[in-house]
Image (tube, rainbow, N blue to C red; front, side):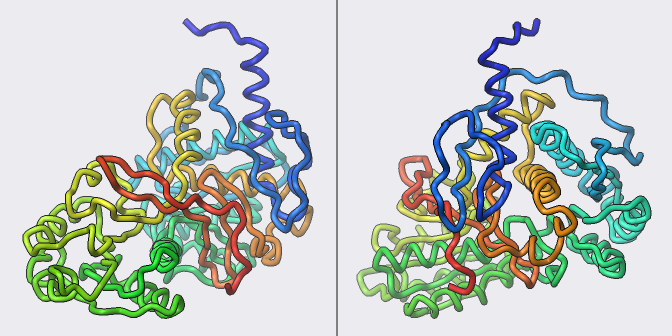
Length: 421
């Protein structure tokens, strides 16, 4: 039985929706309303700090019935039309449904903004994404949110570019980013920069790397080399290995990462949670000591099953602050009855951003200059901004693995550094 709604519950829900929209609303002026949670004047700065993470509201009204798979649906009935292109059938349909739910939650918590969200099914493939985008634009969409997969983002971008409309995609493949095609996803490059920066600031000067021969490994190796060079440190050695077979590469690298003669003081391992245990075992066999050479990685390490690995004790990785997503997850579960996938926050932030920009910027709401504002925006996972080349930058925290847990040792900055720094 649902419990009665108290005055406090109503206040929390209003606070949550107000704070959520204010938090993402925009630089250079902060929220247009009052932060009921704090009731203080926002500091005057280049980027007004995001509002406090809203308290999870009490049980929400029952979720509306979802449309049948493959059908077109709308969220809202406002004058500003926004396309949401997702895999609702075919490959990725489970994640697509969660992204659609997150978009609904954002719309509701933004207090029914002047948006109509045209939800289109791309069937998990480029042809479907092209057709879905064409249909949404035919209905008057001014911006495309999604798709999820790289090939689908490319296909949607071709259609949107011809119509002069921007795309905010959810793919992690930076090769699909371009002018007018922005990626809101969790890109590995900023994570590499952040963990290298933290290591150098902590006195690390000589880096080694164990990099898998995968698309992800290829994507981060160049960024790793550039980040180390920018910080004035050196690369002692880099070894590549076939996915799932790190042993020989670890043996070759042992001369610089193991024993009293180790010349490296940090070891970069951009590996997945599924494959990292095998790497850790090979390192332990080779005599690697994480107390002497600190292991470092990306947000792929943010998996509790890894926190007991002996080779990773004292290791650090960069990742979005977990508090915001944890709070979002609680609200999502209260509304939809299930745990959201990690990427669900992307659809939430994309809809919140569209609502905030349409509320404040009129005809320039989705202009390039608006979307690429250097001060950025604040979302579920912290502050982010879009670069003119379509890639995104995020404020990231650094976590240290110790005693079966990951503890933040360097919080995510609330204000991003000026572009180009």
